[in-house]
Length: 124
Image (cartoon, rainbow, N blue to C red; front, top):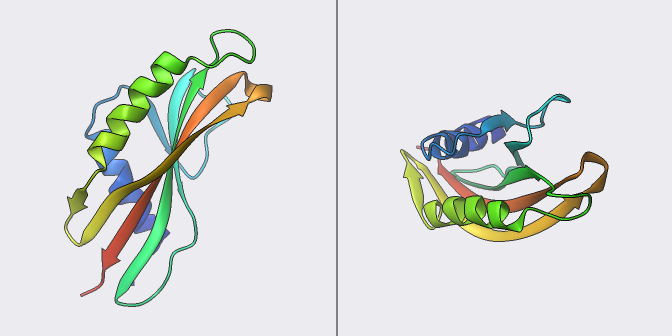
């Protein structure tokens, strides 16, 4: 059986291959993270021969002024990731773009683009 670790690692490898120049973190970010970074985490994963889960790819960008998102940069990075995950395959792991929404992180003076990737893993 595969676990969320496998799903996160598959998406992580795909994003790392895009050479975006951003720090990538699994599960959560450290307190002293840079102005731009990506956090990858998952929702629960099912069991069985075919396992499915949602992997969140959260692109965090510092606001250009308090409460005002850097929409140009967020849109640019979001488009790159979304286009890559129209269909991505790594061995027996299939990854598809599902949906996206931008959220504010007022306390951190950042906004982030939450991109949901559906991951389907085949256990053979």
